[in-house]
Image (cartoon, rainbow, N blue to C red; front, side, top):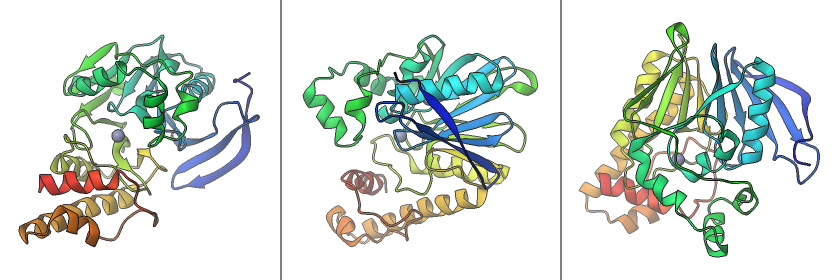
Length: 308
Ligand SMILES: [Zn+2]
């Protein structure tokens, strides 16, 4: 049975947040995640099985952002939040059409699902995938848990598209979701409340190597959005991946993106080839813990090089 759960007693403060460790009892149960209390109305499910999931409690009901790779995790988190806030779920917003953010969307099959229409080509691609062994193996090379998660997955098109802005809630309770592009052309985010909690999607990938290898990645839009949040002096940022961070750490990430863009531009102007750029690794020191570059890092460097 997949719903046998308990919320553990482990609580500790990180930044202004509280993390409660939630662990599944049996190996076949819901994959574990941490509940992060970001503000009185925002809670984030922090885990590595695809994207984080954020919940915003509005007067009218709960709005979730992203669904991760895991229908089981998304379902468990949704149920936990409905009990906690004593409200039903009114919407799912998907910050962009990357599989690790949308595969768990079956947990929200009964509510409106919103996404930026700019991501429609990727949506059409994912919805059309025939999940045979070959496709599963291919995606598992990037997302190792996908063979388990695809069993419960039910990808479908969003029920509602928005262009550049989506408004949910009303009055003081209103939240505006804005499509700025950056990570992808459809990358969308919101700032909740005065003082502000950012729900960033993959515009922020905290304490991990960032992915920026799409043909529609736009560095200047990306950096501009990060700068805007810094200027707002937001209280906290819920990233697409990694822990909740503050404005100072957001600034470090933004500086790395600016530095990387400038470094690649300079090397390209000096006629350094893409191959030499990859070999030399002359980007600024990473803001993430040291790791071995994954296979997709080359795509990222190529995108940065092509855009410079
Ligand atoms: Zn992404």
